[in-house]
Length: 237
Image 1 (cartoon, rainbow, N blue to C red):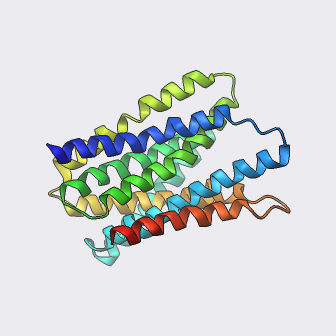
Image 2 (cartoon, helix red, strand yellow; image 1 turned 90 degrees about the vertical axis):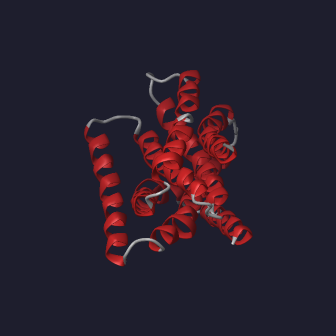
């Protein structure tokens, strides 16, 4: 019962990073235009670094420990292709919710993997929860700005919507804890699928938007995000 409660709380906290990021974007008010641009690009870069650390330090190593090399490559590539297909579809229907879709696409499988990690006693479970929260914060920031740029979504509505979506974390986490903990191959496949999709998203949506001409601070956001992931990994290793 204690572990189940831990799964619910951990995945919920990780999910609540989404409305927190949206709230930061809503209340962010920097008068100097160049500082504002640099801050926003740095936040995006930080999110990219956190995503990359989740892939490199938890998701891929855990998947590789269970599956054969060909299966590892297969699920990783399928994840990338699936995220690419979603990207193409969203572009065709011209929706302002591409960042939102990307955020949910990696949050849900990661939460499933988180629940299974707690059930199997993996030492990286808390690290994974922290990395999910770290990546959801800047993703919530970016998704809010994307949705707020339209007249359809009002600020209050966006933040409430993100708060409700945080509940998908406990739902997914409990599912992984109760039903998938006895199937390590499925969990490994989910982790690798998410990894391929995340890596696609980093280079498709985040990295191209990080660079600013004659400004060099934003890429350090990616470095700092990755360093935080490394520290968490070393402390739990």
